[in-house]
Length: 482
Image (spheres, rainbow, N blue to C red):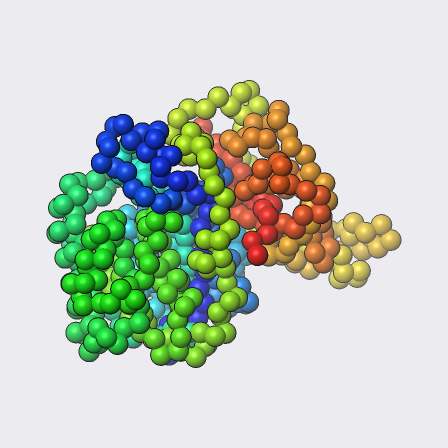
């Protein structure tokens, strides 16, 4: 049996009320107003970092040595020529003899990567494949995209044992349909006329894909527990369900009002949401949209109880929100407006790529060492044990810190160092089980930081060297999400 063996998701903590966006830019086009709020990635987050966060959620309780392939889907990769899947695999500290691949250029590629993972496991070329999908799309100021686009990520593990939802079939349609597009080198999304997108795109392709899947799998609409499909337009989302004969309870919440449309990750995030409430025997259909549509049918097994409640998924991330009260902060986080960084902020040392290669497990994977003699964990990895009464030489084993929690020993709020969200906060973290290191802190304000507060590690952008085109990543400390 081939299917889903684990799942995970990530939604940034920041949410902004769309009313704030409308008050700032609604004068350009009063028709853009939308209710609700949307998720906004922090200044140090992007599609890669969010993909890592969702993947870590998915990997809870999973032996990472058993992963044979990693596929990453996004339309907002930080690089034109550097594989994002390779960065994510290093952050997960996966084996080097795995297959990695990026799926890009269409918001449909999240499900395309998922289908490719299923095909790989069915063919026997891999036993366990983790799929991550994330997007951080930017709309022009005053556009409807600025209000509707949200940031988020999802991750699905495909395998052939302990399957929580088996893949029962799929159906795809492919069309060169230009509803949204970005040419090479462009930042902002372009969109064609709304009515054309609704009538020819969503209302046609999604229905065609679901109808084709139902016919292929001999599936009656009444036998489906949940159908998860995207749509930029709330009214049309409901109309699609009615045309298919679906009851409101059968349609998965598209999260337009509390997260927004998250591009490649959207169908997978909706799938995670459906799995969180699923029970054995449920049929779940997940559908994508973008240059056509993919429709996949999953049947939930008894193994679903093994995973339920052990992932943060959608629900816990929705509950862990913090309000972003400044439209100006949102657009500065996206580097849409130039910001005065001062001399300290403008000076970025060149990245030593040879050292980054040699220390990739330490920097991207946060892998340190543990003394075999006294059992003391230490970061960075050492040759000589740092414990004064030990001092053992060359008696170290690998020790990962990325999945360890800790407590803040001491901290500083620095108004002199440049930060896109001042003050810059950093401190010493004492890890549970041993080990100590200093980290930048993020997703916090100075008033909420306290000595001895519980923290965990989060993979984030450390800097962007615009001159060399290098995005530097490292781990930061964030408050624990319960």
